[in-house]
Amino acid sequence: MQKSNRKILVFYASCGEGHKIVASALKEKLKVSCYDILDFCPYFFKLFYSSGYRLLVRYFPSLWKIIFQLSKKDIFKKGLFLWHCLIFKRFFSFILKEIPFMVISTHFFIPPLITRLQKKIKIKNIVVVTDFGVHPLWGEGDVDIYFVATSFTKNNLINLGIDEEKIIVSGIPLREGFSRDINEEELRKKLHVEKEKVLLFFSSNIGNIPFIERVVPLLDEEFDIFVIYGKNKKLRKTLRKFSSLKLFSYYKNIWEIMRLSLAIITKPGGVTISEAIYLKKPLIFTHLIGGQEEENYYLLKRWGVAFKVRNGKELMEKIEYIKNNYPQILTKFPPSQNALEVIEEKLEKLLCNNDC
Image 1 (cartoon, rainbow, N blue to C red):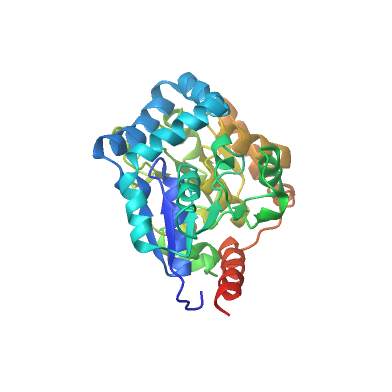
Image 2 (image 1 turned 90 degrees about the vertical axis):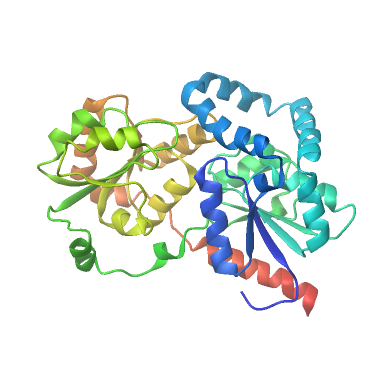
């Protein structure tokens, strides 16, 4: 982004990795500062929001669905806003001290708080929605521009009462590496890939990869299998008995493994599926979280590029189906664009309108 005397700040909330990944991508592209809003509330509440979310979706998914439905109610929205005004006082002080021209949010906690500050100082309130489906709280606050994944996302926002003119279909911002040209043969050597086909499994912060132990022996002869197990040390210990697996807690340049993969086995988080769509990689979901992830899945199912399985037998069947129908599946992916470039171009125009 061209230099401007206007300060831009990016904020996310560390409730799941997707919001943070998108915020980091924006930070790198726009060359601006980036903050976790949960660093501006008492530590107990930061722990409650970040760890509490993972506990809910892992152990009490039905309760999470109830909370998701409650978030559509005005009384819930008003109560949450008042609560956030109380616990995020340091956030208000920080913004009033920094006086940014623009705040870009990748989590729905933030826009209503910026709206409150707009009564004291002028701030452009910019939102990047990080899912294909829309959480009801994304519609809160007086937002200047929404950047969204697809026209499906746009329509969801319109149904929440958002002015269509404020919504730009940009795609979800991806890390820079996804747009790089990479030589596949060099990648195969780097990653020690010996077999023709590759599968990539993602664990999540909410639990194990269902039935992976049962399918690995059946897939091992044909596929090089990569597993990103995250912080799940128990899963790593379980899978170490399969000497052929390539296990990683975290792989920084994840686009490298994704590019080589026939399919990606994961859950339908907005960022992961956006990355897969950009690279045109079919998805298989072994589990999902109610709410936005259900909407994410139903959209991809409608396109015909993602499948949900309930057991190891179904997983094997879907992998075989993808292998046998790969060219046809590729034609079903929607056109992709570089979301970061779309966002940068729009924000530069906004800056120019105020600086020029």
